[in-house]
Length: 300
Image 1 (tube, rainbow, N blue to C red):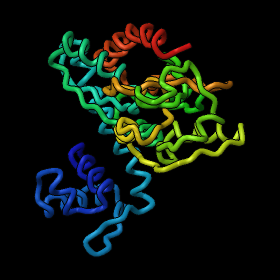
Image 2 (image 1 turned 135 degrees about the vertical axis):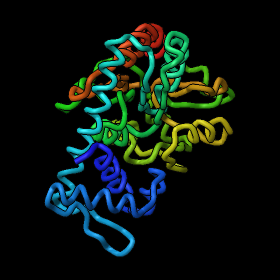
Image 3 (image 1 turned 180 degrees about the vertical axis):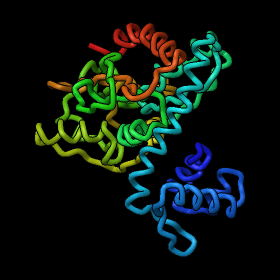
Image 4 (image 1 turned 45 degrees about the horizontal axis):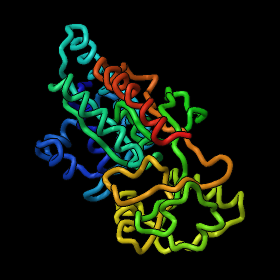
């Protein structure tokens, strides 16, 4: 069993298609099929059911996929440990984030890249649920989100960064833009565009609405926070987000919602099963330094 074969197997499993996997890996389909067959022979079990041009993992393949990912990760970890040991400031960081923490991320990355210019950085924006999936499959090094510290997950270490407040977001020309706080009851008179169900911010909002027995005038639901802000910027609609989400829209104003439990914790999560690169630790230290300012700006 070779590391190369495991990488081929994982790619084919994720795409459920040998042709697409071969293209992704820049090899021929016959090479991919041969290597996976060799892997199956070495394990003395079928990993895929072949169904026409598509493939589907067998029960054994589902089990093997977890260990294959972990083995590939451990090989990468070994390489990273040696790089850290030799104090080589190279490598790659893959950071997952929800849109509401974009500003903190961008400011931290600017400082980090000045100190570590040879570190390759990849940013993945996604919902909290998608980021959790990627963390559990070792696809990202950390995640920035509003996942609470109290979240039960043995695979993660979750650390609080600062607190943000659920807010009505309006254009600065809106008659309410100067008010300090607004009630949900009053917000229910406005047309709003909201994050799609399944986003953690939407789940949080729905819980608050249920607790207060309030219904909103929902004009649209969109699975993209940036689009919600663009629509609000047209002055035709309003939205409800965490006040830390207003990155890149100086014409918008976040008005905190009145009531209890309107705040959420912005957090960073690391896998406890994965070696924490020196570059990742350095990135976290830079981010911590930024969080005091964010607590003053967005916390209460």
